[in-house]
Each structure stands twice: as C-alpha cells, then as structure tokens.
Amino acid sequence: MTHLAPTQRTLFAVIFDGDDTLWSTEQLYDDARSCARDVVAKSGVDAERWEECERRIDVQNVDKFGYSMERFPASCVEAYEQICRSTGRAVDADTVIRVREAARSVFEQDPPLVLGAWETLTSLRARGARLALLTKGDPKLQSRRIERSGLRELFDVIEIVPEKSAAVIRGVVAALGVDVDSAWMVGNSMRSDVLPAIDAGLRAVQIPAHVWEYERACDHVAADRVITTSHLADIPALIAR
Image (tube, rainbow, N blue to C red; front, side, top):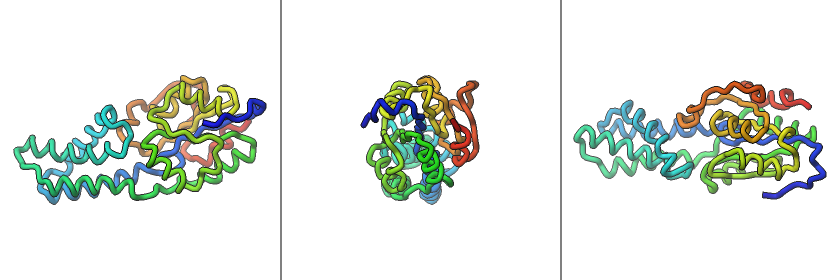
C-alpha cells in the first residue's frame, strides 16, 4: 500500500467497493448457477431443491473457502452430492464434472461496469478527491477484474483483502493521506461495506444491489452517517463538500 504525502490532509477521500458497486458480478453468478441447474435437472435431480441447497451451502462455505474461486463450484457440487445421498441416488461422476464446469464459467466473463462508474470517479477526481478501491475476494480474479474494468488509473490506492474491517479501512484512509472525518465509503453491502466503515469512523453511502445471501445478513442500520441512494451517479452530489 502506497501512502500519499501527509501534506494532502486537507483533501477528502472516497473508498469504493468493487463487485456490484462499480461493476456487476452477481448476475454472472446467477447465469452460471442457471447453467449448473440445467445440468442437475438433466441428471434427474430436483433442480429447485438443488438450488435451495446450493445457496445455503455456499454461505456456509465462506468459513471453509473464504471468497476464493473454489467456493462457488464446490458448493454447486456439494449440493448435488448431498441431494443424491438423501434420495438414495448414485452420484454420477460425469454430472459432477459438468456441474463444476458450469459453475466455473462465472470466472471466464468480465462483469460489466455499473452505469455512471467512469463519470462518477472522474467527477470526484476533478474536485480533488483521493480515491481508493477496496475489494475482497480472490486476488487473482479481482486483479483481473480491476485491470479489465479500465478504472485502475482513476484510483490512488487499490487494496484486495480477505475481509473488510474497521482496521483495514482506517489503513486505506491513512494511505490516502486524509483523516477519517474527511473520508467516505461507498458500497452495496451493509455487512461488508457500510458497517465496517461506520466502525472505522467514516461516513458511508449504500447503493442497494442484487447481492448473494451472505451479504444479506445485515439489511439495515440506523446511523446518521449513512446515506442510501439508488444510483452510483448520485455520489458526487451527495458528498459535496
């Protein structure tokens, strides 16, 4: 992490989440899940039951796999195997392979930018804001998404972390060369973006989005340091200084 000169502490900073804030990834997972579901259905397994099981297992597997690229494919396969065992059906090795391949297809596509992402970031930079990208997930996958997004050059600091916490966010603020009361966090997740930012002493903007079940564990918070908006393009006006 590169720290900017402390002489810049009169500026303000904005820390952005990546997935489903600046670019849309959840739809890619839904598409891959749909492909895996078709494979399961063709094998004779109840596809609806499989999806319910997979979504539950995928949340549980965060403890085992974190946000690595192994978690989602493993969850899809485990759900198929679990239903086979519970119904007395033999696990078909070819189906396992095809389910895993369908699930891994999510990592082969580049997520599209959220409408207004480039314009929002350039507008903030034009006003002198220091910008950071703070994302969690598999380092290789997230690095590729950042590079292909075309947004890398707009950030002063980029961090890929196993988990976001108040300490991690304060570290990013320090690297940006501002004080916590001059920094904002922007993200879609109450659990992973807003709450850690509030704990770190920042203000936050939540942009609700279609997110997976793990991120829905905390769906609201009462705090005067949180603003909710529907559009990324609203950010410059909302945090006008």
